[in-house]
Image (cartoon, rainbow, N blue to C red; front, side):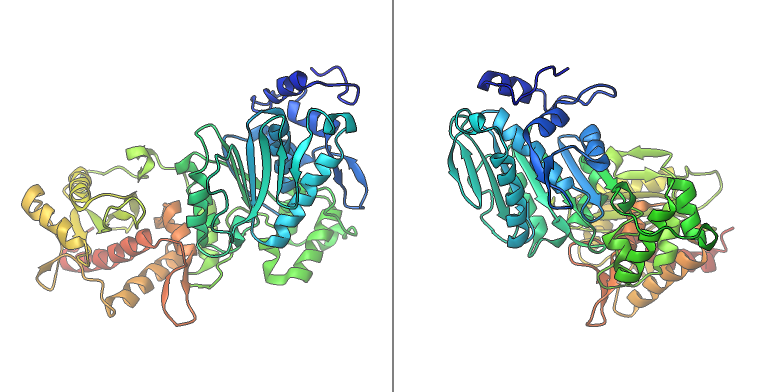
Length: 503
């Protein structure tokens, strides 16, 4: 594909022509423009401190192969993803006139480290290229401007509330998002607002708890259309240590060897990081895209039971409403069901409204609705689901907006089977009821984990923690709507069983 070396000679037109293919889909076989330009033009400092050609490693190649317009990367430490994204975006900046690239790091120190990499890219370009086509009008610790191209490359910190303000950002790289200070979700929202529709976005981080902006973005990636990339530690060839004796392999180690082809030297490295990092080993050197998210507080629910069940979850047999309604089991004649509704206000930025559909006799989770709906929309959808599931019972948490849903069920839908608590329609989640509700869910997750099928529910359980104050609730930035709807459903199911002896 590429026959001449760039060191020989290249003019602006040729550079722009090559740059125009950087966003092309990567072919399964053959040369890749990004790899070629990186090796020909860019230099990096390797682990031994030498300045070498930028030849992409396994993780970098895989990212390049699968990348989309919006990407989220969950990774182990020092996999080279930040360096590759910096290189890719640097190439796009110097080959596409009018391009603005912004990288946002979690600390000032990290921002300076990233920009040292970018300055090395610039300084290692052929002199004739730097002095002509890519002459800079400004090149400081935060910004490089290529005046001939009307392009610029910037690095900021997430703590700067004005980062990106007033810019049109074509390439946005957000580094270590799980460790951004302050309101990371609000910062990210502001940065996204600077991007045109065809801009390229990369969020990357090592995990830092089952909470916060990065955790939420990772779990919502399928819904938002982001391409998910997970790179476990063994993708880095340097992560090896003294070989261990094969006879000493433990069950978990033997499983890794068989499943992922790990060597005894890699198992030796794994033992070394386990001894050095102890409980943080799975966070800093992840092996699984679920277990690596350690709760920053003490998780209220049994994490071993949660993680084990998540690995077993099947996909829904059907999805409706753009994936907001997920169905695992359709209604079966003569069986009785319960629709438990936890109500939110319906705003685009607030909590979700959730409906859990359970079979009363077994407690089996059959379907789950999670959506931002108005009380009227939620009442209509709950009525449709209850009617579909053999005229199921509907129980609505009557706290806050729940009273509006109940009013619509009574006055508009005129639904008959509405659960009553102490002679009043709906369920009241009080300070007395809440511990019993959560305790029942916690017990069911351990005793009968096979009745739960929602990944959204189990992810919320993973970020439901005990705070230092003694209160138990969702971590900062996380949701608990699926949790509370299911906890209510299990309590009401038990009561209905005792009242009507469902089989």
